[in-house]
Length: 265
Image 1 (tube, rainbow, N blue to C red):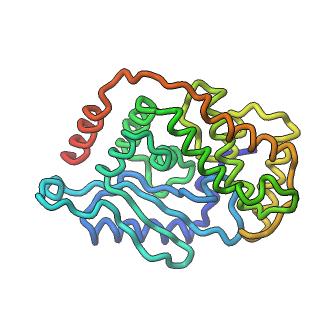
Image 2 (cartoon, rainbow, N blue to C red; image 1 turned 135 degrees about the vertical axis):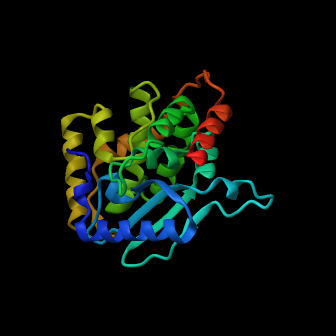
């Protein structure tokens, strides 16, 4: 299986998204540092009717951050033409990164980018690696997986393929961290499979599910795969096995330095 690339987004859609991002920069007086796909297209299992979940991180002029009254730290736009486009201020993103936030981590690793890679992305990724709280991240993915599977995992009927993936991807994220030294797990399902040492038969089953979702709508049912059901149960139950590790940096100081560099640029 291959990782999703930018070519999975139609050229006309990419141009429309790029146009909207530029309009946001002009209307809100911001610089966008990172603009990525964050939904099922980047996760590696889109349907024909999947939305475009565009997420971005931006920075404002220095004076904005010096106000006594804090401004709003998100930019949200209405969904139009299946394009859902929202962003976070860099200060918000860094604050969440200090908590090893899974959402920020996944945005940094998204395989689908709508802007060229900004020089800020590499230090953001390095900081996310240094601040990784593996038990906390595993707990987050376990909650995601359990919430997605709680109504069907213990039953025996068919399940919407979308819900199957919403449980499988978190389970593989936990497995990836267990087997690869507490690394931040990739966002993309195919990349997770590559790092999860699955038997060929299970890799084939995942590929079949991806193809089924690619040819159906978001709510179409799919026949269950017992081996994948067992994997989901086992990995969600093993989230507590991830060990704590000591941090060798002062995270707040490092985040402050990066924040000031970006604001002053």
